[in-house]
Length: 108
Image 1 (cartoon, rainbow, N blue to C red):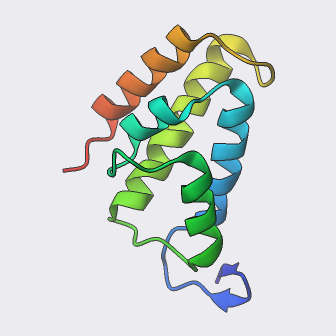
Image 2: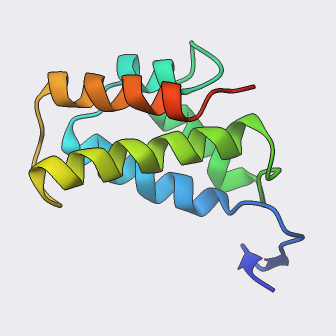
């Protein structure tokens, strides 16, 4: 079974994946404003969510943080498909990817 921070995972989603996605997306140009559209709390920041992910062992598979992780992965996949795996991308590309992520991974 997978482990997170030395504890046994019970079928949950690894928050460390969200950290890696947020770090990559930040390097690609994701702003807090765009991130807030993806997150279920519209006041959260990238830095705050990374801090939260470092403290928690796992996300519930059907929870909002797991859905956020899916959205982040979708955004990264979209920009990498269009622009390769490195470099900052324009905000319009990120906005389009965020919009598509919200449609593809609704909270309900």
